[in-house]
Amino acid sequence: MVGGMWLAGAELALATIGLAPFAIHRLSTGKWAKEKMNCPEEGSGLEITILLPVWNEGLIIEQKLADLAAQKHPASLLIIDSASDDDTVTKAETWLKDFPKAFSSHRIIKMDKRLGKTPAVMLALDELSQTKGIIVMTDADAFLEEGAFNRISRWFSDPTIGAVGGTPNRQGGLSSEKSHRNLYTSIRIGESNHDSTPFLEGSLLAWRSGSVSSSDMHATANADDAQIATAVRLNGLRSIQDPELFFTDHMPTTTKGQRRQKVRRAQGLIRLLARKRKHWFSKSQGRFAKILRRNAFMHLLSPLAVFGAGLLAILRNITYLPDTDLMGLLSVFEIYMLISWVLARFGKSPLGMRTSGAIMVGLENLFSAIITTSRGKSLHMWQQHSDVREELAKKSRSN
Image (cartoon, rainbow, N blue to C red):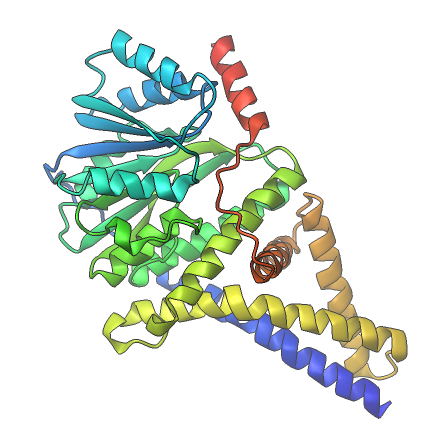
Protein backbone atom coordinates (compact mmCIF):
# COMPACT_ATOMS: atom_id res chain seq x y z
CA MET A 1 0.00 0.00 0.00
CA VAL A 2 2.77 2.44 0.95
CA GLY A 3 4.60 1.54 -2.25
CA GLY A 4 1.46 2.26 -4.26
CA MET A 5 1.14 5.70 -2.69
CA TRP A 6 4.76 6.46 -3.45
CA LEU A 7 4.24 5.46 -7.09
CA ALA A 8 1.03 7.51 -7.24
CA GLY A 9 2.83 10.53 -5.79
CA ALA A 10 5.71 10.23 -8.22
CA GLU A 11 3.28 9.80 -11.11
CA LEU A 12 1.32 12.89 -10.10
CA ALA A 13 4.52 14.90 -9.76
CA LEU A 14 5.71 13.94 -13.26
CA ALA A 15 2.25 14.48 -14.77
CA THR A 16 2.12 17.94 -13.19
CA ILE A 17 5.59 18.80 -14.50
CA GLY A 18 4.55 17.59 -17.94
CA LEU A 19 1.09 19.12 -18.24
CA ALA A 20 1.36 22.29 -16.13
CA PRO A 21 3.41 24.22 -18.76
CA PHE A 22 0.62 23.63 -21.30
CA ALA A 23 -2.10 24.68 -18.87
CA ILE A 24 -0.26 27.80 -17.73
CA HIS A 25 0.66 28.91 -21.23
CA ARG A 26 -2.80 28.14 -22.61
CA LEU A 27 -4.42 30.29 -19.93
CA SER A 28 -1.91 33.09 -20.50
CA THR A 29 -2.26 33.11 -24.29
CA GLY A 30 -6.06 33.03 -23.95
CA LYS A 31 -5.81 36.21 -21.89
CA TRP A 32 -3.27 37.78 -24.26
CA ALA A 33 -5.45 36.97 -27.26
CA LYS A 34 -7.96 39.54 -26.00
CA GLU A 35 -5.34 42.26 -26.52
CA LYS A 36 -6.20 42.78 -30.19
CA MET A 37 -3.50 43.80 -32.65
CA ASN A 38 -4.52 46.51 -35.09
CA CYS A 39 -3.28 46.26 -38.65
CA PRO A 40 -2.29 49.73 -39.93
CA GLU A 41 -4.67 51.28 -42.45
CA GLU A 42 -2.03 52.51 -44.88
CA GLY A 43 0.32 50.37 -46.94
CA SER A 44 4.04 50.52 -46.34
CA GLY A 45 4.92 51.33 -49.95
CA LEU A 46 7.71 48.76 -49.75
CA GLU A 47 8.44 46.51 -52.72
CA ILE A 48 7.48 42.85 -52.40
CA THR A 49 9.66 39.95 -53.49
CA ILE A 50 8.01 36.53 -53.55
CA LEU A 51 10.18 33.60 -52.51
CA LEU A 52 8.89 30.26 -53.75
CA PRO A 53 11.03 27.23 -52.77
CA VAL A 54 10.01 24.15 -54.76
CA TRP A 55 10.87 20.51 -55.17
CA ASN A 56 8.97 18.22 -57.54
CA GLU A 57 5.90 20.44 -57.72
CA GLY A 58 5.12 19.74 -61.37
CA LEU A 59 1.53 18.78 -60.57
CA ILE A 60 0.65 22.14 -59.03
CA ILE A 61 3.30 24.74 -59.98
CA GLU A 62 1.07 26.35 -62.62
CA GLN A 63 -1.79 26.62 -60.11
CA LYS A 64 0.56 28.25 -57.62
CA LEU A 65 1.88 30.83 -60.07
CA ALA A 66 -1.65 31.72 -61.16
CA ASP A 67 -2.66 32.10 -57.51
CA LEU A 68 0.23 34.49 -56.85
CA ALA A 69 -0.51 36.51 -59.99
CA ALA A 70 -4.15 36.82 -58.91
CA GLN A 71 -3.02 39.01 -55.99
CA LYS A 72 -2.75 41.85 -58.54
CA HIS A 73 -0.06 43.47 -56.43
CA PRO A 74 3.30 44.47 -57.96
CA ALA A 75 5.87 41.90 -56.94
CA SER A 76 9.05 40.24 -58.12
CA LEU A 77 9.36 36.46 -58.07
CA LEU A 78 12.28 34.26 -57.06
CA ILE A 79 11.87 30.50 -57.46
CA ILE A 80 14.47 28.29 -55.79
CA ASP A 81 14.29 24.79 -57.24
CA SER A 82 15.86 22.18 -54.97
CA ALA A 83 17.07 19.88 -57.76
CA SER A 84 13.63 18.68 -58.88
CA ASP A 85 13.67 15.56 -61.02
CA ASP A 86 10.24 16.17 -62.57
CA ASP A 87 8.96 18.91 -64.90
CA THR A 88 8.57 21.64 -62.25
CA VAL A 89 11.09 24.03 -63.81
CA THR A 90 9.94 23.43 -67.39
CA LYS A 91 6.31 24.13 -66.47
CA ALA A 92 7.27 27.23 -64.47
CA GLU A 93 9.36 28.62 -67.33
CA THR A 94 6.56 28.00 -69.82
CA TRP A 95 3.94 29.61 -67.61
CA LEU A 96 6.10 32.69 -67.00
CA LYS A 97 6.72 32.98 -70.72
CA ASP A 98 2.99 32.77 -71.43
CA PHE A 99 2.20 35.40 -68.79
CA PRO A 100 5.12 37.85 -68.95
CA LYS A 101 3.30 40.62 -67.06
CA ALA A 102 2.27 38.48 -64.09
CA PHE A 103 5.26 39.69 -62.04
CA SER A 104 7.50 42.75 -62.15
CA SER A 105 10.45 40.43 -62.72
CA HIS A 106 11.27 36.78 -62.15
CA ARG A 107 14.23 34.48 -61.63
CA ILE A 108 14.57 30.72 -61.29
CA ILE A 109 17.62 29.38 -59.49
CA LYS A 110 18.27 25.67 -59.93
CA MET A 111 20.23 23.97 -57.17
CA ASP A 112 22.59 21.20 -58.30
CA LYS A 113 21.72 18.91 -55.41
CA ARG A 114 18.73 18.34 -53.20
CA LEU A 115 19.73 19.46 -49.71
CA GLY A 116 16.39 20.17 -48.03
CA LYS A 117 14.23 23.25 -47.74
CA THR A 118 16.34 25.16 -45.22
CA PRO A 119 19.43 25.29 -47.50
CA ALA A 120 17.14 26.46 -50.32
CA VAL A 121 15.84 29.28 -48.11
CA MET A 122 19.38 30.15 -47.01
CA LEU A 123 20.45 30.41 -50.66
CA ALA A 124 17.51 32.72 -51.29
CA LEU A 125 18.47 34.91 -48.32
CA ASP A 126 21.95 35.30 -49.76
CA GLU A 127 20.55 36.10 -53.21
CA LEU A 128 18.20 38.69 -51.72
CA SER A 129 20.66 40.20 -49.23
CA GLN A 130 20.75 43.50 -51.15
CA THR A 131 17.01 43.58 -51.78
CA LYS A 132 15.02 46.31 -50.06
CA GLY A 133 11.44 45.85 -49.00
CA ILE A 134 9.41 42.80 -47.98
CA ILE A 135 10.14 39.14 -48.73
CA VAL A 136 7.08 36.91 -48.85
CA MET A 137 7.80 33.19 -48.68
CA THR A 138 5.07 30.73 -49.59
CA ASP A 139 4.75 27.02 -50.32
CA ALA A 140 3.54 25.60 -53.62
CA ASP A 141 0.55 23.90 -51.99
CA ALA A 142 -0.63 27.02 -50.12
CA PHE A 143 -3.19 29.30 -51.77
CA LEU A 144 -3.70 32.88 -50.64
CA GLU A 145 -6.85 34.86 -50.06
CA GLU A 146 -7.52 37.91 -52.20
CA GLY A 147 -5.77 40.98 -50.85
CA ALA A 148 -3.14 39.04 -48.88
CA PHE A 149 -0.21 41.07 -50.23
CA ASN A 150 -2.02 44.34 -49.55
CA ARG A 151 -2.57 43.33 -45.93
CA ILE A 152 1.05 42.22 -45.57
CA SER A 153 2.21 45.58 -46.91
CA ARG A 154 0.06 47.39 -44.34
CA TRP A 155 1.66 45.52 -41.44
CA PHE A 156 5.13 46.68 -42.46
CA SER A 157 4.19 50.34 -42.20
CA ASP A 158 4.68 49.67 -38.46
CA PRO A 159 8.48 49.94 -37.99
CA THR A 160 8.44 47.53 -35.03
CA ILE A 161 7.16 44.64 -37.18
CA GLY A 162 9.83 42.37 -38.62
CA ALA A 163 7.87 39.26 -39.63
CA VAL A 164 4.21 38.42 -40.25
CA GLY A 165 2.80 34.93 -40.64
CA GLY A 166 -0.51 33.84 -42.09
CA THR A 167 -3.21 31.80 -40.38
CA PRO A 168 -4.08 28.45 -41.95
CA ASN A 169 -7.48 27.52 -43.27
CA ARG A 170 -6.72 23.83 -43.56
CA GLN A 171 -8.74 21.57 -45.78
CA GLY A 172 -9.12 17.82 -45.47
CA GLY A 173 -7.37 15.87 -42.78
CA LEU A 174 -8.94 14.33 -39.70
CA SER A 175 -11.05 15.93 -36.98
CA SER A 176 -8.29 15.47 -34.40
CA GLU A 177 -5.89 17.33 -36.68
CA LYS A 178 -8.23 20.31 -36.84
CA SER A 179 -8.44 20.38 -33.04
CA HIS A 180 -4.64 20.25 -32.84
CA ARG A 181 -4.23 23.10 -35.31
CA ASN A 182 -6.90 25.27 -33.69
CA LEU A 183 -5.26 24.87 -30.29
CA TYR A 184 -1.81 25.87 -31.45
CA THR A 185 -3.07 28.65 -33.72
CA SER A 186 -4.76 30.29 -30.72
CA ILE A 187 -1.50 30.00 -28.76
CA ARG A 188 0.52 31.61 -31.56
CA ILE A 189 -1.93 34.52 -31.84
CA GLY A 190 -1.85 35.09 -28.08
CA GLU A 191 1.95 35.13 -28.09
CA SER A 192 1.91 37.61 -30.97
CA ASN A 193 -0.38 39.99 -29.10
CA HIS A 194 1.81 39.84 -26.00
CA ASP A 195 5.11 40.31 -27.82
CA SER A 196 6.11 37.81 -30.53
CA THR A 197 5.73 34.17 -31.42
CA PRO A 198 8.80 32.04 -32.11
CA PHE A 199 6.85 29.84 -34.55
CA LEU A 200 5.23 31.01 -37.79
CA GLU A 201 3.85 29.14 -40.80
CA GLY A 202 6.22 28.88 -43.77
CA SER A 203 3.21 28.40 -46.04
CA LEU A 204 2.78 32.19 -45.85
CA LEU A 205 5.52 34.09 -44.06
CA ALA A 206 6.69 37.64 -44.78
CA TRP A 207 9.64 39.45 -43.28
CA ARG A 208 11.39 42.79 -43.60
CA SER A 209 14.52 42.51 -45.71
CA GLY A 210 17.65 42.72 -43.60
CA SER A 211 15.91 41.47 -40.45
CA VAL A 212 17.29 37.94 -40.89
CA SER A 213 20.24 36.48 -42.79
CA SER A 214 21.43 33.03 -43.77
CA SER A 215 23.90 33.11 -40.86
CA ASP A 216 20.92 33.05 -38.47
CA MET A 217 19.86 29.64 -39.79
CA HIS A 218 21.13 26.07 -39.57
CA ALA A 219 21.25 24.15 -42.84
CA THR A 220 20.74 20.66 -41.41
CA ALA A 221 17.77 21.67 -39.26
CA ASN A 222 14.16 21.83 -40.38
CA ALA A 223 11.43 24.31 -39.36
CA ASP A 224 13.01 27.06 -41.44
CA ASP A 225 9.94 29.22 -40.79
CA ALA A 226 10.40 29.03 -37.00
CA GLN A 227 14.11 29.74 -37.42
CA ILE A 228 13.23 32.92 -39.32
CA ALA A 229 10.52 34.03 -36.87
CA THR A 230 12.79 33.54 -33.85
CA ALA A 231 15.81 35.19 -35.50
CA VAL A 232 13.78 38.26 -36.47
CA ARG A 233 12.65 38.74 -32.86
CA LEU A 234 16.12 38.12 -31.41
CA ASN A 235 17.42 40.69 -33.90
CA GLY A 236 15.13 43.32 -32.39
CA LEU A 237 11.84 43.30 -34.34
CA ARG A 238 8.51 41.61 -33.63
CA SER A 239 7.32 38.36 -35.22
CA ILE A 240 3.53 38.06 -35.26
CA GLN A 241 0.81 35.82 -36.61
CA ASP A 242 -2.04 37.75 -38.19
CA PRO A 243 -5.40 36.09 -37.37
CA GLU A 244 -6.97 37.67 -40.47
CA LEU A 245 -4.25 36.87 -43.02
CA PHE A 246 -5.54 33.55 -44.30
CA PHE A 247 -4.15 30.94 -46.63
CA THR A 248 -5.60 27.58 -47.62
CA ASP A 249 -3.66 24.36 -47.70
CA HIS A 250 -4.50 20.67 -47.54
CA MET A 251 -3.53 18.19 -44.88
CA PRO A 252 -2.28 14.66 -45.62
CA THR A 253 -5.26 12.35 -45.79
CA THR A 254 -3.81 9.57 -43.62
CA THR A 255 -2.81 9.43 -39.97
CA LYS A 256 0.60 8.12 -41.07
CA GLY A 257 1.15 11.10 -43.36
CA GLN A 258 0.07 13.56 -40.70
CA ARG A 259 2.29 11.95 -38.07
CA ARG A 260 5.32 12.00 -40.38
CA GLN A 261 4.74 15.69 -41.01
CA LYS A 262 4.36 16.51 -37.31
CA VAL A 263 7.37 14.54 -36.11
CA ARG A 264 9.53 16.21 -38.74
CA ARG A 265 8.39 19.66 -37.62
CA ALA A 266 8.67 18.72 -33.95
CA GLN A 267 12.32 17.84 -34.46
CA GLY A 268 12.95 21.24 -36.00
CA LEU A 269 11.27 23.05 -33.11
CA ILE A 270 13.08 21.17 -30.34
CA ARG A 271 16.41 21.73 -32.08
CA LEU A 272 15.67 25.44 -32.40
CA LEU A 273 14.61 25.84 -28.78
CA ALA A 274 17.64 23.92 -27.53
CA ARG A 275 19.98 26.12 -29.59
CA LYS A 276 18.37 29.29 -28.22
CA ARG A 277 18.60 28.20 -24.56
CA LYS A 278 20.78 31.18 -23.61
CA HIS A 279 17.78 33.42 -24.34
CA TRP A 280 15.31 31.53 -22.10
CA PHE A 281 16.04 33.77 -19.14
CA SER A 282 17.52 36.76 -20.98
CA LYS A 283 16.36 40.05 -19.47
CA SER A 284 17.27 41.85 -22.68
CA GLN A 285 14.57 39.90 -24.55
CA GLY A 286 11.83 41.05 -22.19
CA ARG A 287 8.48 39.29 -22.62
CA PHE A 288 9.82 37.16 -25.45
CA ALA A 289 12.20 35.36 -23.08
CA LYS A 290 9.17 34.16 -21.10
CA ILE A 291 7.45 32.94 -24.28
CA LEU A 292 10.61 31.20 -25.46
CA ARG A 293 11.17 29.61 -22.04
CA ARG A 294 7.64 28.28 -21.78
CA ASN A 295 7.80 26.79 -25.26
CA ALA A 296 11.11 25.17 -24.37
CA PHE A 297 9.54 23.54 -21.30
CA MET A 298 6.53 22.35 -23.36
CA HIS A 299 8.62 20.95 -26.19
CA LEU A 300 11.63 19.55 -24.31
CA LEU A 301 10.61 18.78 -20.72
CA SER A 302 6.91 17.92 -20.97
CA PRO A 303 7.22 14.92 -23.33
CA LEU A 304 9.80 13.26 -21.11
CA ALA A 305 7.86 13.95 -17.92
CA VAL A 306 4.56 12.65 -19.31
CA PHE A 307 6.28 9.55 -20.69
CA GLY A 308 7.76 8.91 -17.24
CA ALA A 309 4.33 9.38 -15.65
CA GLY A 310 2.89 6.88 -18.11
CA LEU A 311 5.47 4.27 -17.17
CA LEU A 312 4.75 4.77 -13.47
CA ALA A 313 1.01 4.49 -14.15
CA ILE A 314 1.50 1.14 -15.85
CA LEU A 315 3.71 -0.11 -13.04
CA ARG A 316 1.30 1.06 -10.33
CA ASN A 317 -1.78 -0.46 -11.96
CA ILE A 318 -0.02 -3.77 -12.48
CA THR A 319 1.29 -3.89 -8.93
CA TYR A 320 -1.45 -2.27 -6.82
CA LEU A 321 -5.23 -2.05 -6.97
CA PRO A 322 -6.77 1.44 -6.56
CA ASP A 323 -7.93 0.87 -2.96
CA THR A 324 -8.08 4.54 -1.87
CA ASP A 325 -10.11 7.49 -3.12
CA LEU A 326 -6.94 9.22 -4.33
CA MET A 327 -5.76 6.24 -6.31
CA GLY A 328 -9.28 5.69 -7.65
CA LEU A 329 -9.47 9.28 -8.92
CA LEU A 330 -6.00 8.93 -10.39
CA SER A 331 -7.07 5.80 -12.27
CA VAL A 332 -10.11 7.65 -13.68
CA PHE A 333 -7.84 10.47 -14.87
CA GLU A 334 -5.47 7.97 -16.46
CA ILE A 335 -8.31 6.28 -18.33
CA TYR A 336 -9.61 9.67 -19.54
CA MET A 337 -6.19 10.72 -20.86
CA LEU A 338 -5.60 7.30 -22.43
CA ILE A 339 -8.93 7.38 -24.26
CA SER A 340 -8.32 10.98 -25.39
CA TRP A 341 -4.94 10.02 -26.80
CA VAL A 342 -6.12 6.83 -28.53
CA LEU A 343 -9.11 8.54 -30.15
CA ALA A 344 -7.00 11.49 -31.32
CA ARG A 345 -4.34 9.08 -32.56
CA PHE A 346 -6.93 7.52 -34.87
CA GLY A 347 -8.40 10.78 -36.06
CA LYS A 348 -11.34 11.13 -33.67
CA SER A 349 -11.97 14.22 -31.59
CA PRO A 350 -15.15 13.96 -29.45
CA LEU A 351 -16.38 16.94 -27.49
CA GLY A 352 -14.78 17.03 -24.06
CA MET A 353 -11.58 15.36 -25.25
CA ARG A 354 -10.43 17.69 -28.02
CA THR A 355 -7.87 19.70 -26.07
CA SER A 356 -6.57 16.75 -24.05
CA GLY A 357 -6.35 14.58 -27.18
CA ALA A 358 -4.50 17.30 -29.11
CA ILE A 359 -2.03 17.77 -26.25
CA MET A 360 -1.39 14.04 -25.85
CA VAL A 361 -0.80 13.47 -29.57
CA GLY A 362 1.44 16.54 -29.63
CA LEU A 363 3.46 15.15 -26.72
CA GLU A 364 3.72 11.79 -28.48
CA ASN A 365 5.12 13.46 -31.61
CA LEU A 366 7.55 15.52 -29.57
CA PHE A 367 8.74 12.43 -27.70
CA SER A 368 9.24 10.62 -31.03
CA ALA A 369 11.21 13.60 -32.32
CA ILE A 370 13.40 13.62 -29.18
CA ILE A 371 14.14 9.90 -29.58
CA THR A 372 14.83 10.32 -33.30
CA THR A 373 17.22 13.19 -32.59
CA SER A 374 19.00 11.29 -29.80
CA ARG A 375 19.70 8.51 -32.30
CA GLY A 376 21.43 11.00 -34.59
CA LYS A 377 18.76 10.83 -37.31
CA SER A 378 17.83 14.07 -39.05
CA LEU A 379 14.47 14.60 -40.77
CA HIS A 380 15.39 17.87 -42.47
CA MET A 381 15.06 16.59 -46.03
CA TRP A 382 12.01 17.77 -47.95
CA GLN A 383 9.18 15.24 -47.99
CA GLN A 384 6.24 15.41 -50.36
CA HIS A 385 2.69 14.33 -49.65
CA SER A 386 1.74 13.00 -53.07
CA ASP A 387 -1.89 12.49 -52.07
CA VAL A 388 -2.30 16.23 -51.51
CA ARG A 389 -0.64 17.16 -54.82
CA GLU A 390 -2.70 14.66 -56.77
CA GLU A 391 -5.93 15.93 -55.21
CA LEU A 392 -5.05 19.55 -56.00
CA ALA A 393 -4.15 18.66 -59.59
CA LYS A 394 -7.43 16.76 -59.96
CA LYS A 395 -9.44 19.76 -58.74
CA SER A 396 -7.56 22.06 -61.10
CA ARG A 397 -8.35 19.85 -64.10
CA SER A 398 -12.03 19.69 -63.14
CA ASN A 399 -12.21 23.48 -63.04
